Length: 553
Image 1 (tube, rainbow, N blue to C red):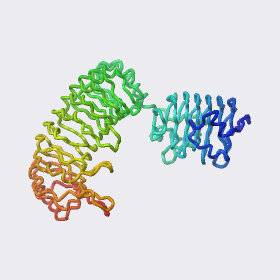
Image 2 (cartoon, helix red, strand yellow):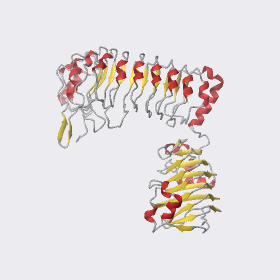
Image 3 (spheres, rainbow, N blue to C red):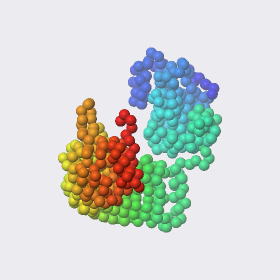
Image 4 (tube, rainbow, N blue to C red):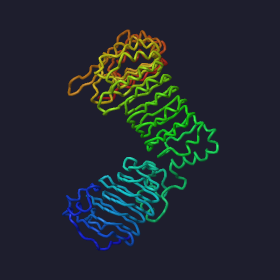
């Protein structure tokens, strides 16, 4: 490109003046005052208009000055701002207008007013601290933000936005991971990945970047909804998952006959329209993987709801009216970040409850056992995995219909004992991994397992990862084993057994007498050769998983 040097109508100011008059450090991260001897600060006191393109005059890989434009900056061509060394800043106190805004490296570019670009905005190679901040509104045909460059917008840009969702503070139409699939073939390198220099060249030339058939998922979803509107009263299922929705479409509320609705994976949905409660025919609702802080109280109006998934949100609280879902049979709430409300105890029809990963406090805090669970006497499946529980109360035994209990990663040395699980007369599936997901969670002692051999109803049992543990040369937990000779005598219905990642060298005779055993996992369990030979002889059709521990482990 041809470089047009802007008019020399600037004056050099000191860092003290820059702070006093423009509060530069409020928005500029670059420690420019530390480099005042090397980089002057150029002030354009009455705005600036550049006839043609503008890029800074370099000193090697560095730009030897910073720029403040007090007022509007209008560049008739492309504004190409960069720094490949230490950094610099460009601060515009008014609006910025240009054909394209092309940013790379580590400049700090701040526009306090609006940013109007006729073509595109591109940011790349920002791993040393490059970013763009816009305080007003942003208008462009496309924004492409890749390779660690950061962009912050006071308002979502009126543009097609492609970028790293973790380095762009508003919803994106396509992630940078999708770039290779949506760019025109001529903008890809020989290896099939995006050629960012070719993207820059296309922007300069005013050429399109995307394949003609490419459209954002939220636009496609909206078109599909509109196409269905003429028969909205007949539609009973809608899948709007992974559609990058920013809000619930207005058209959704016309589908009053919906029985199943999935909104899963729309991570830009931070709240739900209260009118969701008007879809009273709903029986299944999937809200997993959103960013909800709460549910609308009107969720309680969905009296026909049988299945609700709210896993993976950012809840601060759940509404008390959730207890009005009296037909709810399945509630999936893994990764719940708020306490389980007492209202859950009113869900008397509940048969399956998933609370794995429950963590209402700081990640290193123990979690109070959710007492509301003990009121759900019809529950058949309870998943409480990956929770550092403060207790396992005997009231758990009041869940007389319980068939599945998952406590993987939730046991610890803080628990004096387990409830007498043999009293759960319908328990078929029990998962009791000895692994703890957190280094600060004290590992459970093998003695916690003493009572499980008395459970007569089990069909699937997991007691994996109970090997010895040590720290600083001291044993912090002894290994499980050897197992009692009679361990499996009272489990004639056992079909699947997981003993992987234990330090067992032998197996009890009772295991070899299990008449219905179909699956046996002994991965990374150092059994003696005669034991494995006996397994193959006694269970010729079983094919147990006997993969050894890696050498040196």
